Length: 244
Ligand SMILES: NC(=O)c1ccc[n+]([C@@H]2O[C@H](COP(=O)([O-])OP(=O)(O)OC[C@H]3O[C@@H](n4cnc5c(N)ncnc54)[C@H](OP(=O)(O)O)[C@@H]3O)[C@@H](O)[C@H]2O)c1
Image (cartoon, rainbow, N blue to C red; front, top):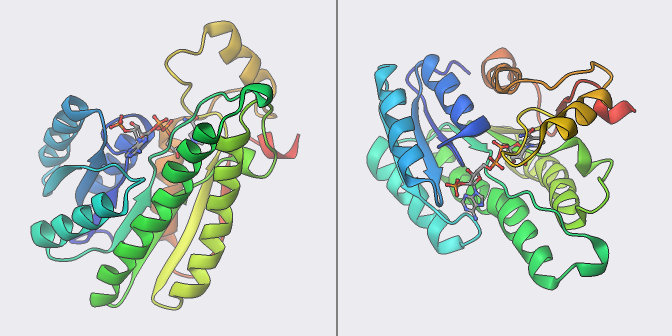
């Protein structure tokens, strides 16, 4: 699918990986709607950067864990842009939850945003995509959805659910809509990760370094523009972390 003239939604597109993806899609000529939850100022400045690339852009505040918010988002996208071709489900939360202190709230927080959010977005988006006979959905999983990290049980399960969701949606939405996932390894460290920990993380990766947001952007562009013959796949962009 050529991106020029298409319309894409990128959840969590105000900053970090989501922002890089939004700019990557705009760079190929797609109009982009980004969603944010708390990062309103970042969202405003990302929209400016997107428009500077010569495409239409808008930001919508959305709590992705709530169906009413997601429905409103997709209605607004339709009203603003008049079509929808690409959905990138990048937004997620990531928090430590040691087993002995795990609560039901931790479980719900991870599952509602990271697994139910992509499902709700995909469900509403797919109905809009079908109006123009097709589209592409890209979910963000994690290599830890296959090999869970210790102390992050709700997060790891939510990312395993994203991998399963990708396969189930691919089957439901074929042949018009292709659905794939990207499972990043260490790409951008959380802001509160210290230098020693960053070095330790890199040492565990066969390629001995962190990846970059551009590695993810390149994969997103490949899944959209590089092939129309992949669906239900999860692509690991993890420097080999999964095979250790
Ligand atoms: N960074 C990495 O190295 C790495 C590694 C493995 C997997 N991944 C996956 O790749 C994706 C992007 O990574 P990232 O590090 O850029 O993500 P991130 O910074 O942790 O989160 C992206 C955005 O998700 C949004 N978000 C969280 N809860 C939300 C909710 N309930 N409703 C709406 N938005 C919500 C936040 O928006 P606001 O700021 O507006 O609140 C946040 O800016 C994520 O799915 C992540 O799990 C990343």
